[in-house]
Image (cartoon, rainbow, N blue to C red; front, side, top):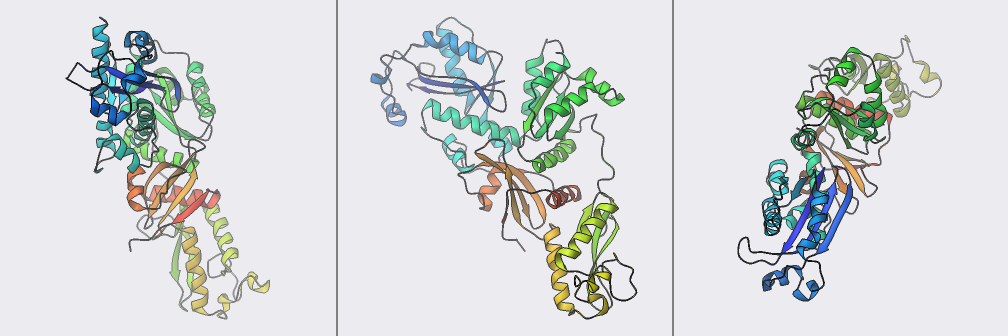
Length: 456
């Protein structure tokens, strides 16, 4: 659990500042579950430059509660939480100073979104809150007021959690929350997991991820994991201390995150898939110059149009391609006819099988089919559902290679490469990611595709 906060002060000498406004959002990693927002009477003068910056003046604070009147609420809402702030050292110091004046030793773990952003979103021109969130497409209102800045920090921290593919933040928090606790009943753990699309992480008592997976219904999948009597699952059940999760909104994002994070985190109970595809579609040319699409065994040494999990899947897709683009079943190896193919007799083939169709015209159809069913040399953004109703997910493909995934607000334009670079969590491109994306796009619909310029 996190307590994301922002504090406005009077300014003045070091350790003599007073709080004028405070906003705290209790955040469980996915949504805000509690909040506290209040002006505070600092009982001292506010520096003129601070009044100009924040708009908070002494007249506004005359009837506001003094710090000792809100101190109990601050202790309660931050209890068992890690404090998160933009420049956390400042906010934490101010809080400790105020509590020290009351004779109370206020101690919490803390995280700084400035430091996290420098690590997870490097090479930004500025890491000030205002400039950083604007460059990331995060809406912010009431800048330099505690509530506005705290809300922006919540959204920034949510993005940083998604970009933390090594899960250092998440593992550290699980470890901190579970120190000295008994392992809760498995069904109690299941109740905390939502019945939605995403990636779930099973942790041991040290916070380490021992297993992760994706599911369209994470609650159902985790429940199955805990009631299964398979040997591997029994080991997981003995070691589990907590289950965390990340909503994705999009099943394709979940598939890509699962693949990427298994490679990076190497959970001990995730079994590596040796054979992710068995067959592929290859392109060649016959003696008459006609381009052919042929099914063959998957071979990473050969350049393929697209890949498949089985021969039957490849056979079905090639049949679909032939019908969709009026291609010849005989040329593509789906017919053993000695002369014309059967489709020619029913006017679904223009006669390439017997040399009647113009070679250039036929090859144009083949190239269009290849472009439709392959990522090769294409650049586009796959737009799909996000984690919330006002959000969308984005998967960036550049020159046929996966660049990464991200989430953005509906009011934000993301077809600019510089903007894409800032919101995207980079992922390693590989034949597996290409297979995942192409297989998904063949079977399921996404909200839309945005074409981009290629670098070629």
